[in-house]
Image 1: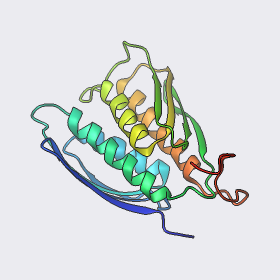
Image 2 (image 1 turned 120 degrees about the vertical axis):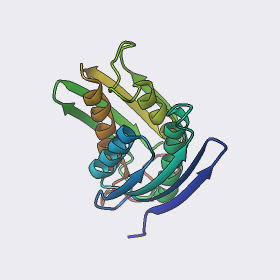
Image 3 (image 1 turned 180 degrees about the vertical axis):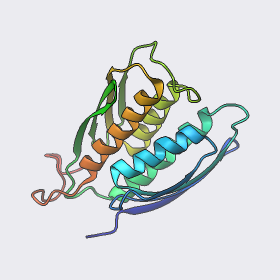
Image 4 (image 1 turned 90 degrees about the vertical axis):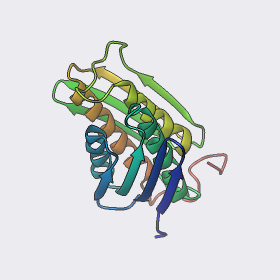
Length: 196
């Protein structure tokens, strides 16, 4: 099987990011963004997606976390798209219902090459103590746009901000893992268009 890996970097006036990813890994990671909670979420993303991820990000955290989180989503999306190559033989679709104590999230993915994020959560959804909930959506949007994937995230219910963010990141990882997997029954591109 062809190696599905990518190395990407991004440098702007706001952030500097270096990333390597292996879609067929063991879920091993080395992650440093300067944002402890985000590191935790990306470690979960790696472990539950079985993606090997090495990520180092430096950003203008004295402003806020937004640029670092968004730009990290951009780079991960670009890298995953590159690693998928022509997408021959993949499952294409993935779905996960992810429980985390009192929380339940649903994440559905189509690696369609048509970027769209549908993110549904109540406007009063609580944040984790040190990570605004709005940044979970920003990460998902940047990932969807640059992976060129159709991603639907829905918080079905939940009360604890940490659990909510964790359920979404784990659910995203599991859905993407499923969508990226090679299906031995699929020949060529999984689309009647014969292109993704």
